[in-house]
Image 1 (cartoon, rainbow, N blue to C red):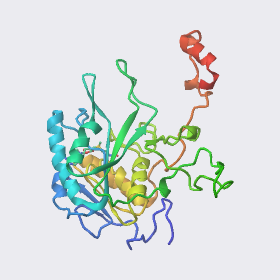
Image 2: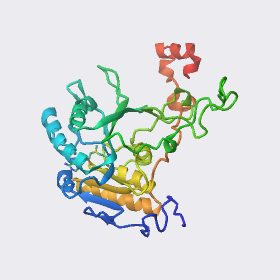
Image 3: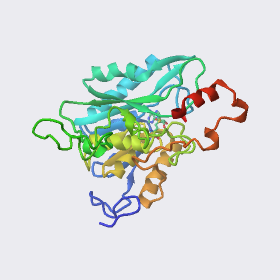
Length: 338
Ligand SMILES: C[S@@+](CC[C@H](N)C(=O)[O-])C[C@H]1O[C@@H](n2cnc3c(N)ncnc32)[C@H](O)[C@@H]1O
């Protein structure tokens, strides 16, 4: 089949001619559904056991302009009702990935993944990993340590779940290692496809030795940035899609924002659906889906190394005014730090 620049085929494995229609309501035969409205209403239209992967970053009351402020208890009660519906529509072999950070109020930190864990556990889900998504940039705190990670709680509905390790392997630290005893003595001991990426996600060319995945947070200079204040990178969702679903499966983001999870699903021949109540974000999501099909979507390819400063950039140099500062002396002592 001929390929477009995005990798989308002119007739895909579902038999759709690209671009397939974006349905506004659930249709079991669709490839893409983008519902504009409240997720609670949309969920009532979904049959039981439909979705293979629920992946989302839910709204949390950090006072961002798309969120209502509600007390944490009320917020969690409302979320529990939605989660019960998500569990109902999840297939028995399906997974749920819940991406959250911290809620901070008056300097106090409320770790949302800890607060959410009990809700999922009460609904019978089993935690398989608490993935730490680490990123290098953000606000500098002055009264506590600066926050540099968020988490993804990956739950399954049963013990019989899809897990594809090979598509998400990362390069091994020592691919040349060999068995030093036993029947395979002298043979390479690693896996030619790479190693398990671990539960700390960072992709950095120079930092392979740390074994981390660094998926840059979506900020102003990121190619995927839209008007949405709180997108996650496509790559983050792609890893979950690849590992936890098969081609043709439904991937559902109940808080779809600008459609990041849906793009990740389409990139890997899965069916994509999302619900988003903000009309502007839903419109951007539809636009990005169209851009994906016509080959103009701006995105950071999966696995692309994160830019590492060489130390020669102006912003990496100590300002002249700080030449005698403790920082400058520290850097002189620690050549490796440069
Ligand atoms: C953290 S953002 C998700 C961003 C998304 N991951 C992306 O990359 O674009 C949460 C989204 O949920 C939407 N939202 C909040 N409450 C909703 C509801 N009850 N139903 C549908 N969408 C809702 C907000 O408008 C917001 O866009």
